[in-house]
Image (cartoon, rainbow, N blue to C red; front, side, top):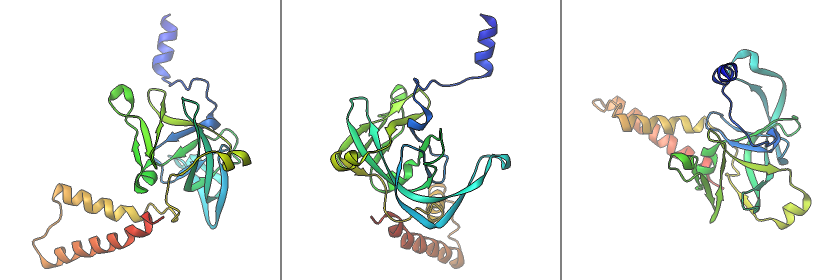
Length: 218
């Protein structure tokens, strides 16, 4: 009755339809890199790049370090079709029990795949289109995600494989300058009244365009 209503209001949650956290591949625009949980199999580890996980506050910092890696998983769609998904440049949390996986959509978009996270109930297409394959996304009303499982040797041999991201090491800092240029162009924020500012703008554009192929190249 009234008590239950108050509790629901003060503690709003979304339903996951009994999907185990480890099975969730959530598309998350708020992370700097993908996070690979136990459903992923590491295929390449960047031993020279060590990562210490941090949360939104200083208390949410892990004492442990891990590595960046490339990994694969098996995505199971609503129509029971399955695909091996290869995702490069993520944080290796494959040994962390209960860890859900987080996918950074811009990595796939930079690799020229269509990622529409706008959900069906608000007029979106809620899907990924990659290499001619249409992969619908699941939704719990708030989050868009795929359901996944750890791949077997047979899966890697027999299932169609889609490479979702570039094989070039993921470095989000290289995109900051590009985003800044587009923002300033859009808001007409560049001061082009002096030679100095015009030259500086040109230097920004040249350096960014020079770095961009290194991000997008397979």
